[in-house]
Image (cartoon, rainbow, N blue to C red; front, side):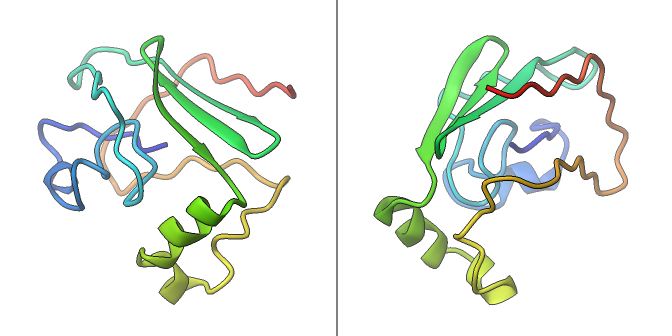
Length: 117
């Protein structure tokens, strides 16, 4: 789930149809609706994953749903830049690590919780 200042970061205008804006599945699927609050205000975010189904919930609203390991998922990834980086990228692990990444800009998190469904 992309965390981004849509108003100030140039990546918000890159990609296709807003697929690099806050809440999106980076460079693959745009958030709809785009309901991110501006920098300086707190956004809430949840990612729910259950049996290959994934929901992005931003500010209390489901903004994205997709399904891993399906033909649609495989086609989506195959048409992206990711196979060039890792040919096995579509085969997302069913368990592993959770990471938070930034590119040098200020970002704050609070009340981070991880629960098994």
